[in-house]
Image 1: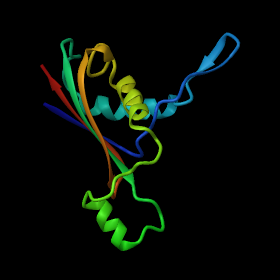
Image 2 (image 1 turned 90 degrees about the vertical axis):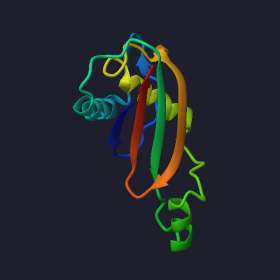
Image 3 (image 1 turned 180 degrees about the vertical axis):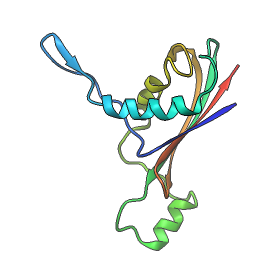
Length: 130
């Protein structure tokens, strides 16, 4: 099992924007930042077999939250059920992991993902090669 931590606000996937024959990725800078952090922690060859991912997205606590609610959020009694959607977070992360940790995202046979509140926004990925 290899654990990777990406600091910063979890980023969701956005479709490519296009004008005629030209298109661009609206999350290009964020993807570069994620990949830079992943590359600095990944010191192995690219995986070629099946992969299981455990992902935890630490979402920021909204401003103006009372101390009671903040304590409940940090103790796991309240969960973030607002945007971004967890499936879009997963899409973006898998796109960032592709070619660094694994050859293609079709190698992932199981994903366990959750959004929780945290003091520092970050994404923790546990890669379980089989």
